[in-house]
Amino acid sequence: MPKIQTKTEKEADWEEKKSIVDYISSKLKKADYYEIRLVESKGDSILMNNGNIEAVGFGDGSGIGVRYILNGYVGFFSTNFFSKEKVDETIERSLKINSKIGKLGKKTKFSKEKIEKADYTVKEKKRIDEIDIKEKIEYIKGIDSSLLESQTKLISRMIYYSDEKTKKMYLNSEGSRIESEIPRIDIYYRFAVSENGSTLQRYWQNAVSGGFEKIEEKHVDEKIKKEAIALKRNIIEGVQSPKGMLEVIVSPEITGIMAHESVGHPYEADRILGRESAQAGESFVEPTMLGSRIGNTIVNVVDDPTVEFSYGFYLYDDEGVKARRKYLIKNGIINEFLHNRETAYELNTHSNGSARAVSSHVEPIIRMSNTFVLPMDYKEEELIQETKFGIYIKNFTEWNIDDKRLNQKYKGNEAYLIENGEITKPIRQPSIEITTPALWSSVIEIADNLELHAATCGKGEPMQGIPVTMGGPSMKLKIRIN
Image (cartoon, rainbow, N blue to C red; front, side):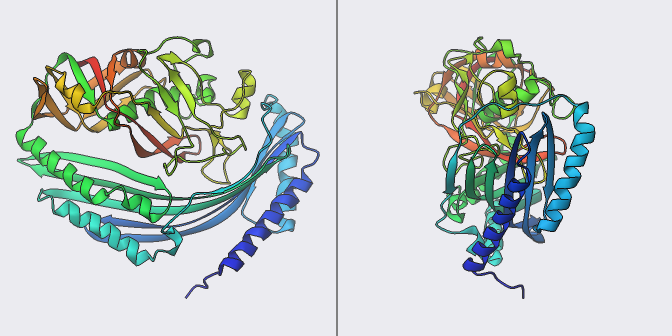
């Protein structure tokens, strides 16, 4: 049996690791600037495939990531050794490399930001690290059982559970010192329903920051059952989608993927400056487009890490900058980009706390957090009742968008015909193909039913999959359906 550390032992171990952070700080006094991130993560994972538990994992790791500027050139190193001897070797090696190859690049400067001192924790009523793995397995089995109760022909079904508690300590040479502890839980599922020789597939992610009680509040077992029943009905009763210029109501899930892909990503300042072109792509947005119109006046899109218990929650980013709500689109106008301290300096502004790294072993880069459309006063039912002939798209089966985040396509999965203000027949995979400015200019009404849906956003080289949410309320669009 592995030794279980007492709380006192855990605290002592953490304090010892923090002392190494302070030791590294003392060794970098000659640097123009430095920042040190100590990260410790622990968690469990469970994979269930077609009712069988195929894998159970236990993760436990810690490390230190250090970024510094010396003579104007950026250096970075990381280590998972916590001895002064090993740290000395790593620092010496990094400084030698930086002195030889740093001058091949251009000099870097960061924006001036406030000194921050903070210590925060996401509260848990049911601590994820105190719940036995058997209880977590039973929870997953309950979701699988609910899916089977849908009485649909399931040709495949997979559920993946993971949780992780991440503890961080950050300090920089300017005097900022921040500690945090954030627990996260993620449930990803995928299943396929077959009827009459046709098959439809559904995949989705439900995730939170917080204790086990927060994922229980998502009622994943009820959702997955309803979705399976809806797909079966779509296959049996679904009719061909109407085409042409129509009024289309999209649910919060569709609103969310639109906001994430066509607003969040192209508003990342590193993309705008061409820094991500070889990895994640470029942006159609130019710095000079700030203040220009891109959508209807009722469209407001924000990115807000401070939403409590959201999957993308944090109060300070990985550059020590305090998080806040950013208005990417305000009243239809391009209002703000997502910045780290480097892009903020280049574009003569301040960082808005958008830098994150997935671990201590990579540098923080510009990332979204919780990106969503702000709600208005309409009820979703009113949007439907006011539609004489149109369609309602509840969720999607696929989407794609070009590298500049300009031309995009969204294909509906569960979708319905609207006739004389009522939802009638299910329809098969309506498809929206549109440009970003045309999309947000086509919004004619926005409801009040705000929802946030979890996702894992990929970006960077090596790839960094970061926790985010995307969402909004239902929206009515006047667009062409193909």
